[in-house]
Length: 504
Ligand code: NG6
Ligand code: CA
Image 1 (tube, protein in one colour):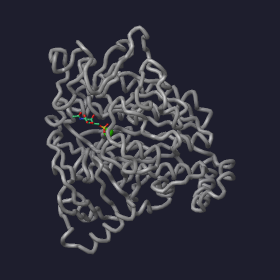
Image 2: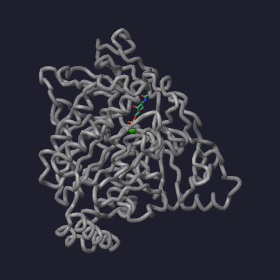
Image 3: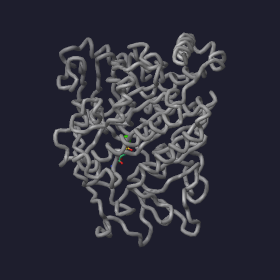
Image 4: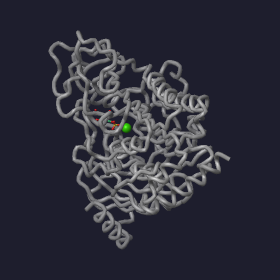
């Protein structure tokens, strides 16, 4: 009974959204709105999950989402790196519209304008209690952060009622948790200082004191050492506030569970931004050695376990059936991203790219095509969708779902595709990697000619950069092996035209 009512209400939402939200207020009053959870992993590849065809690693809990929900084979992040990708997910705006949308330092200012429309703001307006728990990496403050005072603006100023975050990445300082703008467990007599240009006098680094390092760096990552792990950036003080790397997954999971528990009687939106399997890979000892693939595989097993625990929590609180879960990753996979952690050596037959070309930092498919699953018991039927969908569309689509007015250019309302009511996603998508852009349109991809290195030799990944146009038909050539640019000039020109129009 409850299910058919939800179906009916959804039907009216879909009809109204097609009508540009004319009846948004009516919908808002009638709709039995679901809780919304976006689970966004860090550097998880298209081929890293058993539900996406991995045979060397088993991810039973994420598979449960896929088997009982909708698995997308053409689901994308807008960017092959973190900050730009997350910027789009939360704002519905392409990262190349914002010059600062690049991998941010740990002390970079807030990337999102506090006046800007965001997904959490929209949901907040629709009555949701909103939280981010996990990785932020969208900058904090407006230039010079004093880590010893309340840090603002940040997530709480762009729509989140609650935030419990790590500022940038696990490999960047400051290595502390920040709760609603305040560093957790900060001892005011041991203030934190952060500098990304120079070290603090007398403080050890991986270069000056290699004997203090327990995880060896391969490239970059030779500044301050915390918990034996050398990081990017210099940090002094804040001893009491430093996180424990091996406990990070449990820590964020605990916070996520607490948030769900205290909001079980209200509509809630949780952006659960997990840190795995980004470097440094520090799975809890419970998972060490379990994948046979070293820390990268173990961290994926740990993340899968966290998803299982989250599902259990929702079920035990009797809110699972009224929760829409979106599972995805911020960008494609990388093996050696700066530490010696045996990711390459112990890979065996596992293919994190799932047969796609490239990887993190790349304009080729594996850079931005990521795992993408939607799950909503009783509403989304289980299946596989080939619709072209992107994280950037969550703003317009979820805005529609909750009956909020959305004015968006880049973000498309494709709620029907996200819920499996249609196989039609967006027509075109611009993808980005390290400030270069390319076009996916239908089954085709066009990469403009660019200057630069075709291989990022540090991480051993093809960048997608060539000094000539590239054109691929993904339907017949999923691995992007055959450049059809000179064979098919008509298609190439048509793609260039669309690309120019979209970028203007
Ligand atoms: C790079 C780091 C890499 C990772 C990445 C950000 C070096 C040499 N490499 O600059 O390890 O931290 O930034 O990853 O420092 S992301 O997933 O947040 O985009
Ligand atoms: Ca990432």
